[in-house]
Image (tube, rainbow, N blue to C red):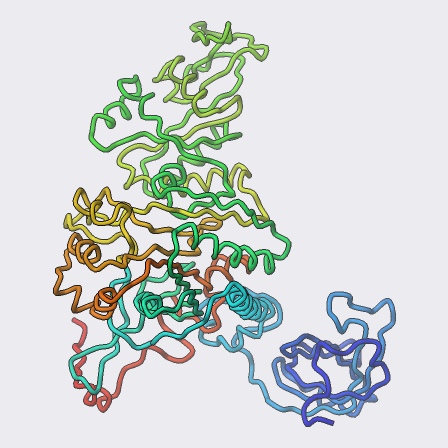
Length: 620
């Protein structure tokens, strides 16, 4: 028999009854049922129940076992009585009667339990990540990740793409985040950079004549951490294609990603309709460039209803340039209690509040509601006081805004927004760039509160027509807003006007409120590239210095090309149905970009610093 095991802990079934077997694994837990010991023995593959009574030679040794000790068990397979079968595990029809037990690896008292899904502090979990990974949910997530990566790789090869590897140590490149710099020992005072993405290399692969490239690529960015983003490194499915348009990239990528979500979505629906939404429309309708389309609510500009109206706050605000009033419909939200709740949410998010109107039936005018009577499609305001019988013919537009606007404007708003009795609308006002992020979160909060967000489905959308440039609100400096290597729509001619009006052939893929893919059709013409960088403040000399390889390559015949990159960590996070990306990364950093298990970052030795000719300046 093998030194450690004849079977895994997921292999045995009733066909093995009567056989002598050897198992090895971790002691998941030990239960004492009045002189009969039951051990749940766990390995990578599954769980097997081991039993020992007082007659077993292994009884005394098993009685002393501590959870997570690694043991080897010899024993006989026994079929369980029908009433004791556990249908939840593959080995639930049998148990192994232990005849011998040997400890292979002793376990000390655990700093966190492996059995069950106890909510332990993240710092403890990351310090003892090797224990955390033994938990069923984490183990399942890591296996899901491995399977997703394999599926992506298989699907890309099947679609005619070839996998190539690109360098990890390279030159610094502006990709929208900070580089991790690596000092050079052989070239004192000079630094390499870890690649934020294989961007330049994959474009050079196209220039070199390889047509359809992909790579499961590690990327390194010195970023502030978020729940859906690692602060140091991540993996992406990196893709590039020659002689393609934007539509060609979409057509190549959709079957791959859709197929992976269908394969690993555990029965959740994958909507095959992937609409194209412009960046401007996405910001207007959803307050974000990564909309969650499971929520049907679309915001709408309603400024015209408030210009010169009786609602002085909005009317005065609209006299300022660049301001607007935007409506967030709330179907089914027609109650003062709900309106107050959303107002409190807005205040918590940093807004002074959200104005609102809601429509409902009332038996009398309470003073702060506008009542309408249906008469040949005309709504006349009821001026009566006291109790007025309604009999389903009166609609009350409730709230201070309705009262200030008056009957006609309030009804016009209701019609334009397609709202009915029992519905509500909330308003945000000011400069869109200031209120949009909060408005987007309010849209999602309203959708969740009212049960409008569709569950059990993945909804995708391509966000297109991104602006090439943006202006820093503090310095007024023009810089790239997205990928600097993108082709501007309209080519060189587009770069002769206002930079802030230039759109790029840039696109993102959003899914359920997360950005999954980002890409572009590339700028492959040196003269357009120089002009594009010039508008962002990079002179010709600097471009040739920083991107010399690409500039040189483009002078020797570069094909039109484009591609994208899909975030693997985020993809697995969605498939695993978790909101924290650290739940799907084997060894993640904490919120402060520290590896608590390995002790990184660490201080270099004086010898290392001398070799690199570096000196560490103490923090003030």
